[in-house]
Image (cartoon, rainbow, N blue to C red; front, top):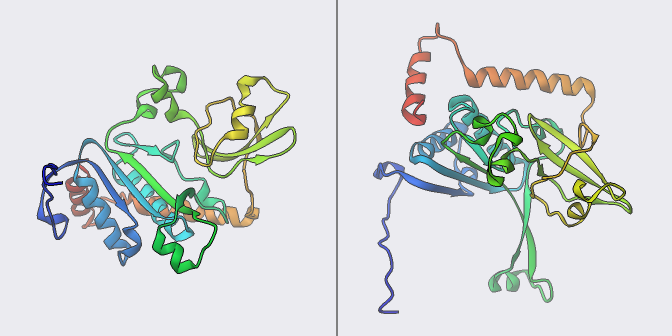
Length: 277
């Protein structure tokens, strides 16, 4: 290994040691270790400020309700402070509207990945046969550049398949497989969490074969046949109305457009410094 050329490694104590811009920033399991929502917001502001034009910010947290809440708050922060016309979500969101899963009641947006256990973990758990486990995680990928959903009015206007895919719904949970049909829970634009029904009797273009093999987190590129507008309706109507009111109040608080407030202009100046808007 003496002739192996390795790139130089720059060590930094914190984000403030350098003002360099990056094309890709990955923060994995970081927000869970930061104490206080204001500190987490300041971290997201600093990471977003370090992105070069067109750069991508990748955030990962544990696939628990708490990890999803961190991702959801970051999502609302970017929408309110940066503006949906100035950036776009690459994954897992298929729109820049309000997150419908956050209002579902019992569900949260998370995914699973099967990984091989390391030898020391196998030894500590005393496993003799099962060397694979499924890790749950919540994630968010955003780019600081207008995306295809802003450039084009619909999927038909997008010229390439890669740009068309930004309009496709995403499968949020494992597909429910029955004898002659499948049920697919997807998140789709404008802000829907709905259940699709795919029947075997339909033509191949409706995606029945694909639905039998589709994996958790895949995109759904076939026509939608909505079986249930709300995929998992656990919340009573009165509770849902209260949640809607709280969500609207939270959105107004995030936007905070009150020119009469003396600290409003100072906060807007700080936002322009961090987000460049």
